[in-house]
Image (spheres, rainbow, N blue to C red):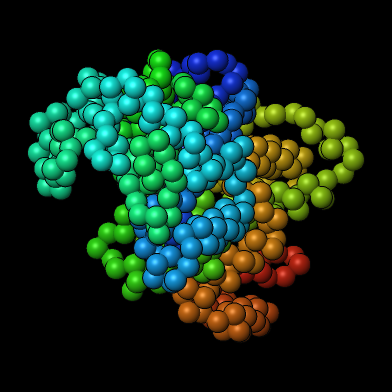
Length: 491
Ligand SMILES: [Zn+2]
């Protein structure tokens, strides 16, 4: 099955054929850096990290640029408030973004351009637009002339009259058409700005991305990504500028991830302050966040709630418990069984085919994850019916583990050391449910004592009580262990 990607431009799934294979040029709009970032900013970062790795797995050579908007009124306002320079604020929050990005263990981008370092390129593009009659000056400001671009609206599917009435709300009398937008905004000598042939000022937001794409990737790129909230006006305007200034289609595939929703629940009350990525990482961890993102399809709205996050923890517990078991079984394997290493079981082979099909079908990570959970469930059933650690079970464990590690790696998931990571998940889960470890340990000890004195009724009662607390006990010849109750992933 070829790779199909939903293109916002055609509003259809299309076969992915890059302009110049195996090269793939990809750009995503990064954040405006004036504060700690919201988890919504990182939904895109996690999804496009997966997309680039899926393309690489399929043999493409990806060049990925993810920018920082480091000149903007929001940054300027914050700088004024804190009595600092705009650059100080931007540098601080770029550094903070990088900390979050590293904690998420995502692959580094080839380019992280900052808008302020590309001002001469922006001036050049604006100059081209002026010369081509696609832009006009009003005093020291420059506006894009939407009328000059007959395809305006082709990405967002907005009709001209709809755009005109929308733009009227905030009409600038100096514009020739209410739909026109600023390419360059004049400013005073005291404010941060740059000299352009038409006067001192700052670039408009949209021209930043267009110019950085031209400079780093060229006139025509394969994938332009971002959140659905950027389709209009940002991407529509980027497109109008690019195709107005240069030849050919600017972007072959426009790919947009959907938004997080927080439902009726007030984030502040229900989930603390986890709408900020740094707080999420402090309360939970990066793996839980990545699982939360990829367990929904990238084009679906995803509800974030404490309940949902706890479900993610339980689902991750299922996977990591399997990985721990698989490691244990493989360590116990004899030399003789080790020769079976390369053998792939037919049922696992067919699951692998299903995974590849699901990822090729518009990057359907929820289906991939549910296939992985089915494999784990089948393994657990098989193991509970087998008397000992048979060669078959060990081979099955090895096979499934290799699939989880292989496709997990593409999603930047499931690469943590199982034993210590499970402990981390348990600690978070207990903390969130206000259960103390001492309390659980005591109940487990009471149950062990009851079992020893053959009081099975009492032992069962305690087990049920633990289950109600979402704690699972497991008895084995070496003793009883406990951990967070595991669940399968339910899309
Ligand atoms: Zn952009």
